[in-house]
Amino acid sequence: MQNFVVSCCSAVDLTLDYINSRDIKCCYMHYFIDGVEYEDDLGKTISYEDFYTRMDNGAVTKTSQLNAETYVEHFKKLLDEGKNIIHLCLSSGLSGTINSALIAKEELEKEYPNQKIAIIDSLAASSGFGLLVDDLCDLRDEGVSFEEAVKTIEETKLNIRHWFFSTTLKFYVRGGRVSRLSGAIGNILHICPLLDVSNEGKLLVREKVISKKKVIKKIAEKMVEDSDGGVNYSGKCFMSNSGCKEDALKVIALIEEEIPAMKGKIKLFDIGTIIGAHSGRGTVALFYHGSKRIK
Image (cartoon, rainbow, N blue to C red; front, side):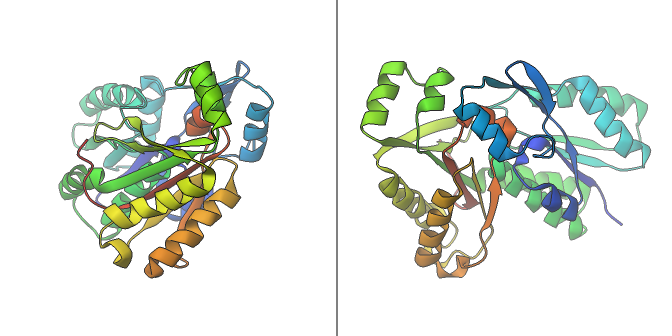
């Protein structure tokens, strides 16, 4: 018998089939396209390609964090089934949704005093968040206790390495993260920023690489540098992309060349609407187990 259920918000950037196969209980976030609200139902209502095409054509996109009432409803269904819950939230460095989850937890613990709810700040994003959730599923399936699972995830979550690159600054400019002047210069020089997620769960630009070819090589080098075992790494590797699968496949081919044990093992997903509403088309993200993020 399972000691707990695994729960998360929909920003995990995994497919619906994968989520169902791992028995993950997902709480769906919401996004807006030109002021119209949609549930982040993992591409069912609006395909990811359609979503990115709309952004390419100038649609204004934004997201909203989950409120406490939505979490109460989500958790209550599981508690009514007699379940204990471990819920992972999108990094607090990117979203305030964890605050709503904690409010819901406090309210429901009074109503269900004999059941347990743990809320964990993943300090992770996109399919790196998904990789951490996947690790929690492994612990659940191994029969690990509720308390030990929480302890293990808290101790290891910063070992999920994140590397992203973007082939365009267009959406960074649109979102106000890069000035119009810097964006114009960057696009002329074909600058592809290389980013990661810090130990505080914030997305940071680490290098400004000139040309897509060079940034693809650089991101593969990063995995060799800080993965567990380097060129001998044989653990999990998740990737995601926002409407640029060909670029992601080039990264996969290079990683398989540098790290032979990865051949055929890398799982490729789409960057969904929650992260994609801010990144736009052209982002490739790489996630694996490695050295602890310390800055």
